[in-house]
Length: 355
Image (cartoon, rainbow, N blue to C red; front, side):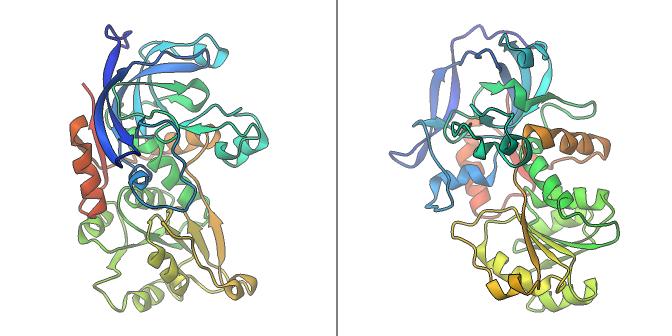
């Protein structure tokens, strides 16, 4: 059961733009506003977007308060709640997951059908970037962007589902393929290993592509029909074309590699195939306008979800036993987690489990 914290401060891993480093600080425990829940964090996991804070980037990543607690992917237990109708739907002790958008209206067309970032109010903030996130012992979250965990999901291991899971699910599902069609999952790590599980649960045939052998081993465990190391195997593109009968029906790119995007058109079935954009490289993508104009392939995007498409992804995960492969660390070990992610030595997802 949840319990109101007896203390007033907590530990938090905070990014400071002044020295571009993390600091383990002691900060005040926040109090929920009327539409918010105070959650005792059970697990918070690391996403590549968190690491982008430390990198030069021209893709629109905005830092707000400084220093700011990083992390936007977590699950936890409700310990107190505000007075709004949305908050009153939860009870102390509920195990919950949530998304990181706050201060948006959740009701305009953009919030309902596109992404909270484009809310008509123009006031949206993202926890972990413009406001404190979840690599801390307690966090406030918007009740409208939260849900009680379905039966079968463990509050200490389900955290990656609430960014990576929702993102990977919709990255695959939004391709609108039929069972038996071919899909290439580009990047088989934190997002991709979940994407492969979703794709197999949807009856698709999967080719996993990565530059790290340990990620390809993970892809095999998750059910990929074929895997290729696109650095070591010089003939991987031709092999993909042969296996898939002329090209995959969709290539879903979960990586932050611009080169991997440049490589995708060569393996997509001409005139029918889709490039699904999920991962965000540091540099803008370059696409051949003639390819798009003449219909060689289509381009579509899939984002990390809203409170409206969160639930189907989470419920699908529970129904089909989709599990993030989670390696756990202590709060003070987050710099080590970042180092492992940057060196491509991590498998699956990495997270902090709190007592």
